[in-house]
Image (cartoon, rainbow, N blue to C red; front, top):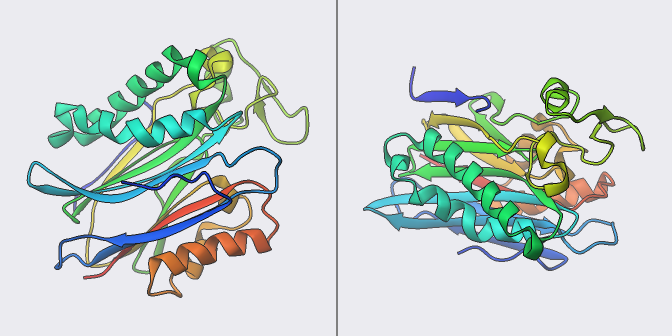
Length: 283
């Protein structure tokens, strides 16, 4: 059946400009894995709050592909902190090399505690996160908190590898922590009428009602694995998983695929910051 396990619950460039794009590839000539990214500032009046990671590194004689989207809110200090520190915190966990799911979960929560302890410097904001670690081109570990999403194309299948942490879905957890879910203001469910996700890094004022433990899914890369899309909700608010994969599959170059996804989201009048990373797998 292959290596697949999901756990429910328990150097990149800065994306500070109005538009940012780039690409790279694995140094493993047999794997032929490449990536591209594209980030575009939304129509809101605040500075760009999406950040990313997309790079390959070598560690302990192994090649690791590190990919992430961080979608901030109420300021961009927290996603910028995550861009610098989250992967290094994961890889500091000795257990990563034997039980990556345990290491990722522990590092996510340690990172959240560090963010909260630095709240005077980082501010009151927070961030969602979706991360993917590709190990030697053969194993993939994906984790998320919030509504940034990872979608995998495998043969004829389009697989959502993450869980959207919606306040309505996790209402029980929020209420058990003393919070509430309200659709006022507007028509979007929010924690205490403020935050539209039930899990996030940071958000000190709401932290007693929020979770920061990620959902994690690990799987084998097979000959059927075609591409992986990581994106913020600026894309997922205006297109389905299947539509995003169909667009990305049109392009041989992952940077072109990522750019087309952000362009299409703008065409569909997405008003949020829009960011994505596309990873292509070629046997």
